[in-house]
Image 1 (cartoon, chains in turn purple, orange):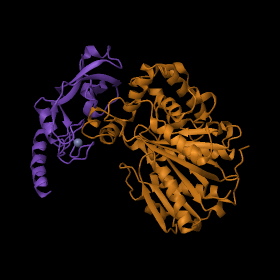
Image 2 (tube, helix red, strand yellow; image 1 turned 45 degrees about the vertical axis):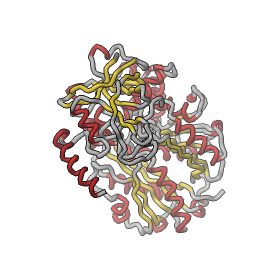
Image 3 (tube, rainbow over the protein chains, first blue to last red; image 1 turned 180 degrees about the vertical axis):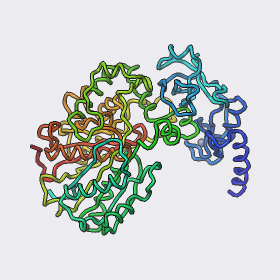
Image 4 (cartoon, rainbow over the protein chains, first blue to last red; image 1 turned 90 degrees about the vertical axis):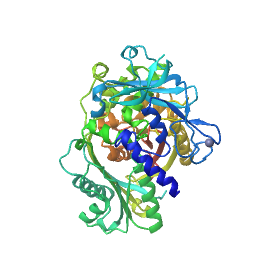
Length: 150
Length: 380
Ligand SMILES: [Zn+2]
């Protein structure tokens, strides 16, 4: 545990260098995920012990409770829109991109992602059931995982 | 029937207050004691809803006990948002039984007007769901309700006109409630012409963030027995949780079906030995009008529940106003007025059984509390 915490201390500092005070906030279970996002790569949690996929990543596998068995895997990011809303009243931080379209997407891997839909042309054509893809793009000065309609 | 009962209840009109929480709470405690017919020395315990971060005075339970010179042996503060009052009722009941004390007062106040909505979104709601993976995208109660409302529309389970009709009904009810915040009647055209806030939710489908306070006096059976027509018995509490925190991690789950509501309702009805047809009045924790449709159908009431069951005669959160940690007091207060037959022009005929329905998250957690009169009779 002591070695683990020493590693966490080092990673916490690297997370701060990349993401400042957050969000996203530091966790041992998500450190590599956010480093991947910073490099433009969207990954899912995968358990090296029981082979299940889950999202978000975490230090304990939600299926088999193995500790520190997260093994991030690439995904095509293809899924469907489960629901969506256009938010006109938002926090100060989101004002430059308001109104924002929030979407909930179920990926083919059976995990659920909450994010924004990008693409002004898509605002009018989005519907429950629309096929879409999750990818990494820069929004508000940082890389984020976001959705676009297919 | 003799049991621990709620003998007194008091609230202040919902509004925008310059008076701090302690002023509002002290007024409510004194009014609830008078309403219950208990003296200061009867009150041997106090349970407070933990104060909101924007409030100056913290540790409100100890503060109020000192200010009112209560002689207490039990003190607690609770916050689980909407479920806080449900837990407080159960705690008060068990403390009265365990310690054989005459009365425990439960208090709560919330001044939402101290925090502008944009700051509320930035600093609180963005961190009540996952603070890294969900909140930063603008997640808030209004957003998760909008996601559910969108699914209702897409599946043909409801129309925008259905949402507007709920707003109109709640406002009509509130027009008869002296403690409600919005009391001027509105039309469906007014609702549909109001500005879009979180599509498909329009301004007049949304609760106003406002200030309020309440106190509930829970008493020992012998104290309650002195006022059999005014004391309300907490007949049962049904509880359920679906395991999610607003946004499910698992694909395929619905935003609008709210499965915990049905489980909690059946749990409550089984414990109370009642059925849907026994319910005369429901006061649900519903901050947005589409959610009333989701919750009432989710609980297991008919699709056109409004034709058979009186829902939110007080005006509900959308018209009565929503002082977050005090809202539960207003729901219980209305049920008690209805059971006593003291709800004036809002009075439901022959009310005998009333429900409050409370949530945590997007009704991930649900509590259904069943109340009846101590004498088992009907109001009027
Ligand atoms: Zn596993």
